[in-house]
Length: 84
Image (cartoon, rainbow, N blue to C red; front, side, top):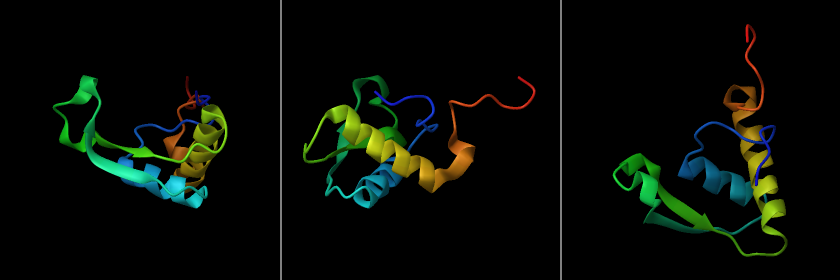
């Protein structure tokens, strides 16, 4: 749902919350929720819910771009490293 150009490596719950707020959303935070794939990893827990005021893909892109701006280029996954 997010292009490689807009993606970052390993976003944390807190940075995602900050990006959602900066994007103009009022996220509902559920820190105790876990994805079944990583149920055993404490640092991989949590989710945010945002009011749906448009297409899900547009909301994700908006938050992703805010995350990308916050992290800068070091979090890029869509770019090849020099020497590749």
